[in-house]
Image (cartoon, rainbow over all chains, first blue to last red):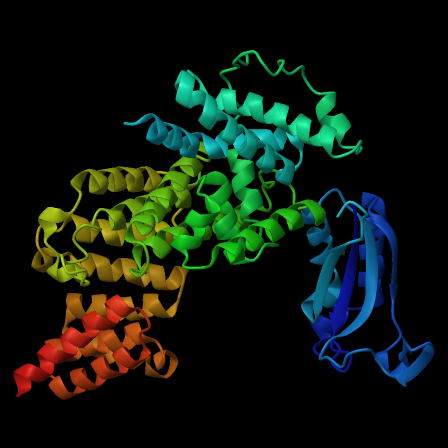
Length: 117
Length: 412
């Protein structure tokens, strides 16, 4: 079963203490990706550019309305994702808890849409 | 016992085990439940004529499997049909099913699935009562004073999420077991408390909730005999439940432990609770349920309120406060210390909690009681008033009001 792990965090608040910075260093992320690959669960993953670079499109009455910024202003912004192939929700939750940004923000775990559901 | 009551009783007893086995074999929570429902309708007709079969569980399981296949045949050739259709041979519809007496006990898996943390707590509770307890949707609705459609929707959503989000049907592996077991015990205790504490609503159904929680915990103890806290919770509930006849007066008024008629306590439940508590302690893995059960046992063993071993109880509260420092524990600890070592000391300790407990009515009720016992009538009256303002349970509020009235009457 494929699960999308959506990473939300407050962009304006990065890691504060040296320990936090170490826990969020690029090496930690690479190590996690390697671990996921070794376990055979990683389908793909990526980070997103900050919401300052976001543009929202709506089509109303045939016209595309373009606005600056994300769809909703919230405290936490979508910052990236992992797409994993797991045997069940527990496995997906296990990996979600290992994502470094889970200690600062939150990870939303959602199965991909399926026609049976 | 009439045939219908006999059948209903059998349904309740067999429901959890049959459903759990069925989910295991079908791999589909919703299909299993629908098929079991069909089988129960079938059983009601047949058993009223032929009597309850020798092994009703196996009868239900066999018929439910057949119904599941019928349902799959009707619902277009989906891939998952293969799973069931290829499985073992199933008796032809007309003949009495050949009984295999050994239904595998998969209720533990079902318990963990129903109490998975990815489900909302109220869904966990409803699902546990419905699937394992065999309570009908209207029964669950009555017990929680929630409308039937709300409960039905809650159950349907939970079942859908179990399937669509891939919530596993299994006993969690060792690394997850402790936290998941804690969650499971919390749900069982919540079911018990719903029956025990809240005194509004249908009192019969509420009695059933206490009984149901005890039954579920017994199953859990049987299936996980090495878990001390499961035993601790079972002991705690039995000990609490032993006092259920004494804690309400004939007029439905709350009677506090100190004033209860101890001859109304159920000594067989007390004995059972203490025996289970001893077996829990022997496992040498202490936890908050065991400590609470030990406190409850000390109350149960005291022949009179005055003979209560408060110094032991105060020590147990010290331990409990370290394990789970919740406000209710802190308040009770202060009261126990007051009873054990001097009311003034207890009151002083209690008042030190004021900043954190300002909106917590048991704190004010405890302050009122200790103030009353130390003849500080004005302080007691104020505290009772504050507690009455904050308390939302009508039976407990009525009790506090009576205390307040007695106190102010004696001043006049």
